[in-house]
Length: 116
Length: 110
Image (cartoon, rainbow over all chains, first blue to last red; front, side):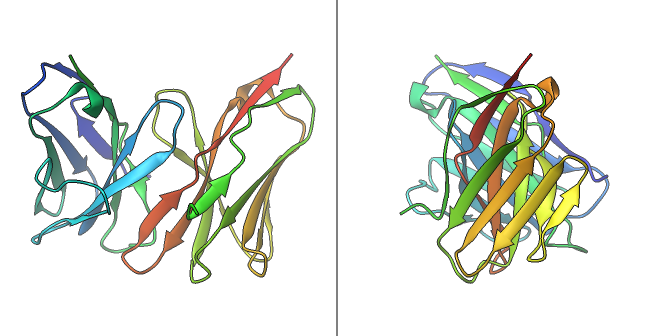
């Protein structure tokens, strides 16, 4: 099946620093990728839709200046958590929809962010 | 009201039991429906899609009731390895966004 990778899988950073998370579709092109956040024992919360070649679409309540999304190619989207705070500590998961089959969705393995 | 709602559980059942989960959704225009399984600290894995006619995959049966806007998942002959969180998901084709329920936790015990 289609493979989506995320890097890093785990990151610990200090408050005030920025962290970049990469999401790659390894064997297909994805015009659209999605970024989710999941707190312990909670559901996946959709943060934003990442669109190749255009601005991301953010869900209500998600600060676009805080969570910068760049979808520069058909296989890569990045999420940068700027000026991270401990409350940003969470599990961040991306998903990618193949351009050839947009109703299908493939998830990355997730990135666990801990802000100290 | 949340767009997708599930009973968070947990459901604690013995091996061999049959367990059913329900999920309701609020957007009547939703097009596609899914059940995902998520193990602790892992990404969700697609368990099965849900069709109006109902569909079965081994011990798992999924059903969709569009009139009442709910989706169900039935697990028969529960195994220890079925212990996980089961997420109901709804795909709204405008933008192909998938919205997840909060998940139902299942513990199967020997």
